[in-house]
Image 1 (spheres, rainbow, N blue to C red):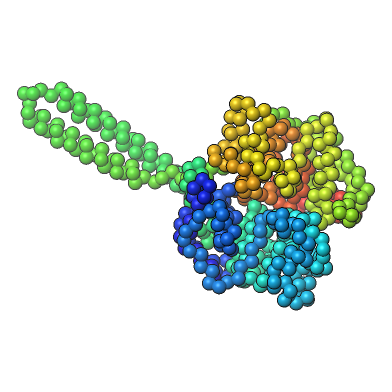
Image 2: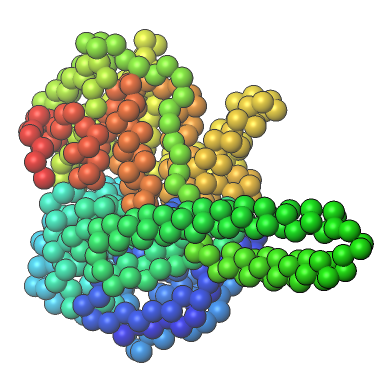
Amino acid sequence: MLQLKDVSITYKKDLRMLISGLSLVLNPGDKAALIGEEGNGKSTLMKLIYNEDLVEDYIDFSGEIIRNGCVSGYLKQELDSRDKGRSVYEFMGEEPAFYDMAGRELAEWADKLGLPVELLYSDQRVGTLSGGEKVKLQMVRILCRRPDLLLLDEPSNDIDLETLEWLEKFVNQWEGPVLFISHDETFLERTANRIIHVEMLKKKREPRHTVCNTGYMEYIEARGRHMVKQEQLARKERSEYRAQQERFRRIQQKVEHQQNSISRQDPAGGRLLKKKMKAVKSLERRYEKESADMTEMPEAEEAIFFRFHGDQGIPQGKTVLDLKQETLSAGGRLLAEHIELRVRGPEKVCIIGKNGVGKTTLLKKIAGQLLAREDIRAAYMPQDYKDRMDFDSTPVAFLSKTGEKEEMTKIRTFLGSLKYTVEEMEHPIRELSGGQKAKLFLLGISMDGANVLVLDEPTRNFSPLSNPVIRQMLQGFAGAVISVSHDRKYISEVCDTVYELTGEGCRKIEWHR
């Protein structure tokens, strides 16, 4: 249904090639996951497939995209300010098929996604909806088109666990092809039957892609085994080559010594040594040829390196949070009542709950309290980084406090460990991918020496390949973490305590998903 022939993508700004010669065919039943590190062009490729006009300002591309008349439905990773400023009804009306949709069918889709059907006709601004409600709204609008092909850029972002499980079922049952990007490893494991892995090697100068007809975990495990096997073979060949070279060196030295010491009175011996030296030179050329044919050492995109800096521990038993909130409201709407939440010492807490129940609102209140305290050093990471980042600034400028040479060197070193190129360090933040912004934000927190982290969906923008690093970093963090997340691996591996927020309050639950 969808065919890519020899597609290459190059950034206009720095002429860096992101993708080179990608060819693939997506057929009905294909659930293809597009994976790779942040900034490798995944979202750009998705936009290009949907509509070339979306990317023509900042990329050049070659090759063919053959759509065969199929109707595509595209889920954006993030709505723009124009969409957020519209009413929900105006937003839905942007899709002409919305008006042709039977009311019963529309109500069924809304119900499956956990949206009240009356919301679709409301004057409420899209920007006032929760993150999960925005994703669900986009899904309803997409389905109005009755698409043949789904292009989903981070569909699991910000949706609650119940909807996430619905989405997994929906993707698996969709008869047409699905191409999707997701940070959620559990979602990938449960849905993908094809993997398209885009990488940037040699300090982000050389693109490589792999297309594999297998599930996510099978791909990761097979890739790991192949890398290990290739490295073992390459090391063995190089060891044997060094031994050969040593034997050759001894032979060459012996012949050279004989040539230097032979008497001029022995012409026959001289001729013999000349033949020997000719054979030695021939052997040298053969060894050189063999070395060129040796198995290459495996190349993989360098993993990010991340750690917190300084003493950021919290004493056992110290009261980090003792919250009592009789009511929780947003936009004049009552969300929850009788909320109590206590955090002690280096506890790692996660708050879950359905979309729209007020998790982000609650976290903002918690952040406001903790940021005002002097006995702790709190840091807050919101869902929308624009709230606390100047997008016109550069990564270096965002992290700099003094502008001193030593500080700037340190900043560039840290950014390099997170796989920023020299050029990206000086790009405006608005030009960075969501994952690159997330890495930058976390780096800023770590450099500030916070010992209490308030994190709203901390893993939402990281690639599935980077997320294990982020989880490991937070596992080892000696301070307290208070977070909102729907990332099941994050909750299982990082969090000590899980609370569920409902309209009736916040209760501790046993986590078993």
